[in-house]
Each structure stands twice: as C-alpha cells, then as structure tokens.
Image (cartoon, rainbow, N blue to C red; front, side, top):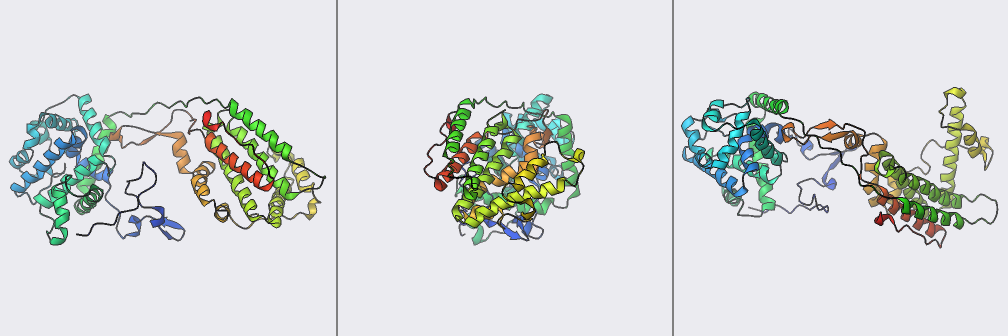
Length: 499
C-alpha cells in the first residue's frame, strides 16, 4: 500500500500536527474560499459531538477515565470476543446494544466486568435515564452517587469532544475494528493488507501520523453509513444532550483579571521621542510641502493614537484594538507612499483628505444646527478645506485616494505578511463581526456535558491581552519610515518589553 504524502505542517507550534486544510488549498469560488468538504456532493460528515459521543458513550467513559493501556486492552477484548460469537448483524453502540443477546453481551463485556475500575466507570451510565437497555446497565453495573457519576461523565466526554484527540481516536478505532473484525465489513485484499495490519496492531505498528488519520477516516465512513438518516439515533442524541444539560450545572469560569502593567515609563519615552519628531520638522519658509506634511502628520498622529492605547487601560480594551488597527493603516499607507516615492501620490493623498473635509462640510450644512453631532465642528472643516486654496476649487474623490485598496498597497510595498498578521483580526472588532462578539461578551461553559456551549459574560469585559507591544513595534516601523524620508532620525522605543 502506498504511503500517503506527508502533509505540510503548520509553522505554529500549537497547530503543527492538526489535520487542517492550509488556506492555500482552499478553492476560490465566486469570492468564497470553499471548504474541501463543502465542495464534495453530499460530503458533509455525520457530526462527532452530536451523533458519535452519545452512541459511543460507554467506550468514551473508559477512554477518558482509565489508563490508555488498560483501555486499549479492554477494547481489543470486546471486538475479538464479538468475532468469536459471530455477531455480524449487531453493533455495540449505545442504541444497538439492546439488540444483542444478553448472554452474548455479557460475554463480550466479560473483561470489562472483571476489571473493578472499568466496572465502576461504566456504572456512571446508570445516572442517565435516557439510555436504551436500562435493564442491562442496572442489573450488570452498580449504582453510584450523582456526584460520582457526573464526575466520570465529565472526564470521559471532555477528552473526547475533539474528534481528533488521542482518546477519540482510540474510541473510533474500537468501533472501526468492530466493523472490520466482528461484522466483517471490509473486503480483505492485498491493497489493504498493510493498512489492516496497522489497525490490528494499533498503536504499536506503523507511523501514527498516518495511521491515526486513516482510522478516523475509515470510522467516519462507516459511521455515515450506519447513522445518517436514522431517526432513532437522532431522537436518542437529542434526548441525551437534553438530559445532560438539564441535570448537570453550567461551569462558568471566573473572569481573569489582567495583570497590571505600568505604562508610565513607556509614556515618558513616547513623549520624548515625539518631541524629537517635532524638532526634526524643519521649515525653510511658510510654503506648504505636501510630502513633508503628510509624513510628519502621519507620524505625529500615530503618536497621538499610541498615547491613547497606553492610557486609561485602553491597551486591554476594544478601544486599544481599534486604535491598533488605525496604526496598522497609517503604517501601510506611509510605507506605500515611501515605496513609490511619487510626488503625485503624496499630492493625491493630501487632496483626497481635503476633499473629504469638503464633502462632510457640504453634507453637514444642509442640516439644522441642532441636527449635527456634538463632536463635529463644521467651522474647522471649512478652514481645513480652504487653507491651501479656495474651497470651491477643491474636488471630492468618491473612490479611494490611489484607486487601490489597503491590501493591494501592502502587497505592492512588500508587507503583505504584516497586513495578514494584523488587519483581519483587528477589523473584526471595528466592524462588530462575530469573532469580536464572541471574544468580548461571551464565555465558555466548561461543562463538556453541555458541549462547552457559550454563555454571556456577567459584566462587560476588559477583553484582550494588551496590545501595547505590537503597537510599539509598529511605532518603531513608522519611525524607520521617518528616517527613510527625512534622515537622520535615530530615536526608537526601547522600553515596551520591560513593562
């Protein structure tokens, strides 16, 4: 059997071995990057959490509460014993166990019943009233206190919520091997001989980086055939998760109080560097120099934004994220202008802003005074739009100032990685997208019997890790652009890693 090609690993250490598609593997269909599963007709898999966990529950409890070596030994005994009884028409899911003859059932569970720890673990199933075959569980296993049962159920389900976890894979191996060995559902050919041998000797044979995914893939195929469209399974799944929700508590973690960071030294450093920037702003006459004013104006505005970030705990708040997005945009635009070094582009950037002032002004003065926002000073807008020429001579550009978008400007400037690193995440907060909502106003119920559902946070959150380090890095990038345009300028931030 040919070995599957090694899939390129992710660079991130946490996700290095995750079985996820790379973004470059997704196909762009009409402006949407389509999941590989969704591009396959009828390719949607049967949900692991919704369908498999309730039906594989007895095995899940063993995998989550026993040492792995013990668990695999017991699993192996189940499918081997079932094979000796020729149970080709039966299944060992929670819903199908009632269909197995009681004597056969005791036989295939014999090793489990001989193991005191395993027997106690499965006794927790008697807590649930929705389970089929209550007579078997009640007469064969003990009765535990509700607290003991819930503890066992939580431990078991928690480690198997991720369908790719080690415990989930072991459970999936059991049910796959039951299909192969007991039910004889796989046709044995020379092409699959190596794979089957790896399955039989799991986890002691073969490269687990390829064996584990093959186990999950094969189990999922059998599960889809056995589960899809089965109304009894659907009703049991609903009843199981409903009872778990009704009879066990939400476990909501206490909010984490962010460590106090002293920004005083950083604020002093920012003020000192800002004064250096102001002193570097050299004028030979009173004429307006578009490039100089745009460069220094961008840098000094960035300092204003930066000081907002490190003030009033904004570094931990949504305000800090939105302000950081502003720094990202300032840097990309100034990097693009510096890269192009085109006098007409500096002029376009300036005139675009002047046109916006005029546009806002003309819209605003169509309204009554009491209809205007309190924060808007229309006299200032008039002055800004007029200070370098009669306002009636200023055009209003309704498009983008250089007919490209921010992403294209980042690509042209050679900083696409910078754009990808920051922009989409930060923009989610500016636009109120779901990721921002999820992070700020919801938390996770840590009870796996509630499927780790989301619940509202009891109070508005100071919601993120501090953004001050990334903000300071961007400020240093901006100072380097100042140096490139008006050298020499040497001051840089040095204290952001010491706070």
